[in-house]
Image (cartoon, rainbow, N blue to C red; front, side, top):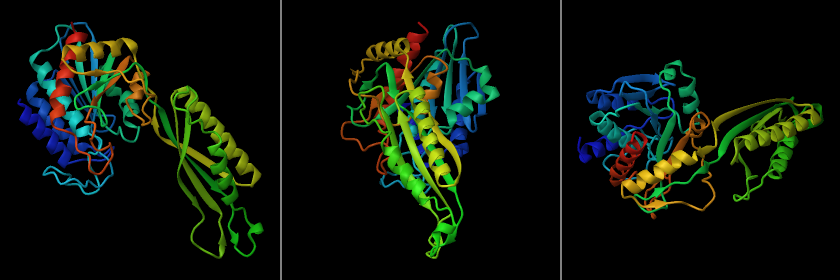
Length: 378
């Protein structure tokens, strides 16, 4: 299929975005594209609406997983492109449409050039943006048929030259987790608040003391960031002393173990404050992203493949990115590498309402994937 066809696919996906855990139509479009290529196996509905297409030699050999993402974001797109979102309030402002097009381009290549041994598994993962898709895929019994021993993924990255390959071993993205604390006391008349248990002071102290746990030195292995994202106490009823409230935080650390320790410290503080003020406490976590760790050997393969493809390779000496990435969970199960492709020095940032994946990057991603496959199955 021609470059124009992949661009057309990318624009069709861009025009019909779907939120995490709602990617049914997107998965159907991908399956329709892949079907004429004759994959040896297609697993649909994996981990929700995920899709795995396998091109298998039928002989023992490397098992390579190539992963991209199906989901879009709850963002109103402000661009004026002809292919802008037709689903108001939902848009592909992270470039997942382009990532899918690149993997579809790779599917065309491996359909024509199946490996002599081993298999290539193409995973179109659901629910990446909420940190739930990788865990759902790995927990799905159907995924037991896929036994990858190597994993790679590409993500676009504004701020770097268009088409440059940005790759480094070790930590690329932090471990990120959100946590919600819900305090329950007892309402009272506002004229006599001592007759109730108001959670306002406990929540205020939690907010202040959480700031003291922050270690915002990104060059340190002990990096720890706690961001307050939402707070509510009581309701707008001026004759009532509040009887309930909640505080939402997002935590991030370079290391999964450090994040677990930070969470335990924050929970212990909330429990202490609840006991002090005679409040019931419930807490929960959500949007859990594991640290994305690039395996040295797989990273070396990616770097060599980029050179084979004649692409500019940048090894950043900057600290890891601060954004979470659901691919991180896969890196705890088998050796992986996430590689970044420059979207342009002046490109709009990811999650911006005006971001649009550059079509010319599709060719670059396909070339890089083809070179990686050639290296893995050499």
